[in-house]
Image 1 (tube, rainbow, N blue to C red):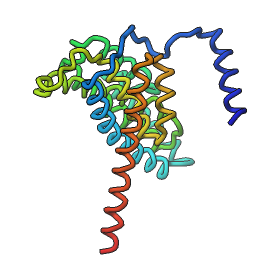
Image 2 (image 1 turned 90 degrees about the horizontal axis):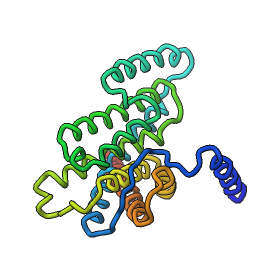
Image 3 (image 1 turned 135 degrees about the vertical axis):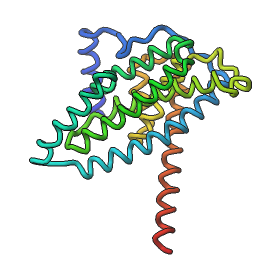
Image 4 (image 1 turned 60 degrees about the horizontal axis):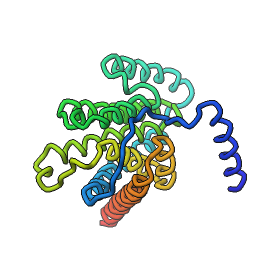
Amino acid sequence: MPFALVMNYVAAFVVEFLLHHSRYYNISQFSCVISWQICVLTVVVGAACGLVGYVFRLGIIWCRTHALRGIQMLCFMPVAGLVIGVAACWFPHIMGNGRSLSQLAFSVASFPYLAESSHIVTILLLLAMMKMLATLLVLRYGASGGVLQPSISTGACFGVILYAIFSTSALSQVFDISQVSAISVSIIGAVSLLASSRKAPIMAWLLVAELVNAPFALLFLMLFAAIVSNCVANCVERFISHFFAVTRTR
């Protein structure tokens, strides 16, 4: 552990001269004020992304367990690339490790009138689903790694989607979220889905906080969302395990 910390500090010190203190994502300045509205949104987003992240993690585990090897991988991996490439002709944000999709979600969240558009919400939902499917497809056909950024990008999309649901539906009459920034909810979604998909809430909290250069007030909400997400994923996992255990004994 001490050696790992020293190496991290040395690496961060060296890269500071190359990249300076810039953000990984291009996010406009925003403020985060802790209120009961954003706390409610944090719980809802954390729970929803926890469930999605759990399903995504199950898919990752299954695809890695049944991943193709040898000559089969050489035959089918180009097919996966062709399928994703054709889909990317219309939806280019599904390409890469997920950074472009995350940037799209954060950019949309920077403009509340865009985040509340039903067409934008539909596009983000479609892109999030396609990104998860594309990730699972390449893992099934033999690829390895590449699950952190897809989790962050899909979580950011779901954060914007849930913000739009709260701001445009009848819930807006109960929850006045006009003072809640959509970008904060999008970041909370990113950390929530990453926490449940990797079963590492602290890692997800620190990683996303560093990538977005989160303001101090948002750090507490991000940690809370990561804990809620992880708890929901664990509860669902235990319920399913108990259900199948009871079913087998009958």
